[in-house]
Length: 431
Image 1 (cartoon, rainbow, N blue to C red):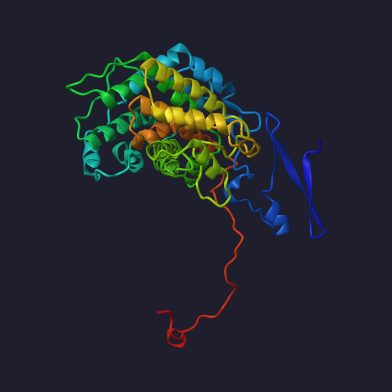
Image 2 (cartoon, one colour):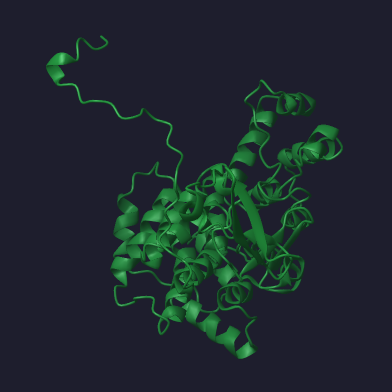
């Protein structure tokens, strides 16, 4: 195969280099396109544009493949822990037992947040969404820890501090929203166990840890640890390309994740299922609306921007969800609706032809709901899991000598040049 692509525009022929990844994925290097031809590419949403070379996550949407640093997501979900997976995503290799133990100790050492930060939490209006609070507080971490400049020498302390504190900060926001006393982390609990205890332990009703819930939370966060160049990751890289500090870059990523077409989708799924249940809507009518070209209704939790087959994370999450419900003996009418929706949608030619398979958000919301996580915290849970990926992507982008300040071009469609008219000559405007 030739290592160049030939492009002919208006009789002019140029050659553009072909870049090939280790899995056979290919791209055309168009960095010289405008300089050589005067043309740019037009690609709304960047669905056909490779913004970087990355060694972190590989996904194949047609085959339903997802791997972190070469390791299949199925193996990690089955055998790994979230802390171990986070180490892998950020550092490139699975940790030795000594490295994992050291990381776990550091996570406990850095799990407390500055007491002054609680003042900020308490002054947010009670109706504030936890994602808005989390974004603001992650950005504020730079002010509380100005000595950390995220150079290679202190990068380990920075990322461990971030991963540890975001879990504590999320639990604090929930406790304060309920008007409850803040629960501090415990040195004898693991990462996921600590989060559940900080969320649900109270002086009058001690929280009883269940190993199946701790394991389920590990799997949930493993499945969300990274997902290639999605919306929020692209935002983290873009903001970081201005040499913005990691705290501000991650804060921007959290804001991007907040959208219902991205991280907010798991919350939107529950809202949709609740509407169907509370209004007594028949599932067949929901399917009919979803297939209508004139109805703005959107079936949440189905389809994916990249996957053209069953999302591999959804398969794992479905099993995880059922296991949690079975162990808790939890009866949820929303699950019955979800299963009916899936059964119809996965056998309907319309959904198959349009690649509308259930995605990871479809089952994650039901599982979180069974665990007692309030709907308003669903996207925060996603953010905690995605943090290792954002950190790894930010660092990779910062160290990549080929990366430049992100600056997309545009195709201008406004008015052409026209004269300035003095205000007294403009006539009467609209009433």
